[in-house]
Length: 90
Picture 1 (cartoon, rainbow, N blue to C red):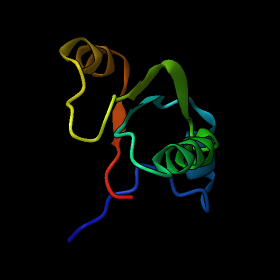
Picture 2: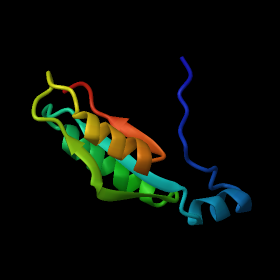
Picture 3: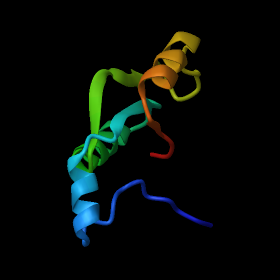
Picture 4: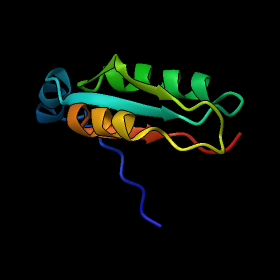
């Protein structure tokens, strides 16, 4: 398995410069499972220092884990976010 972390290498000057630039908006699909919101907020806060930002309009909270996100919510994320954190697990 390969895990890709979209964060610049901040050990080099080029990496630090890249981290200062705004990379783009991150979206979230919260699956309404216990503790996911806390995890998502922590991830968003951590990535803020890497050039990413988050807007509340790009945080979608599903009504329950068994229900899909609405098509208009998916479209809003697709048009406004460079990446989407999707909730799973407890």
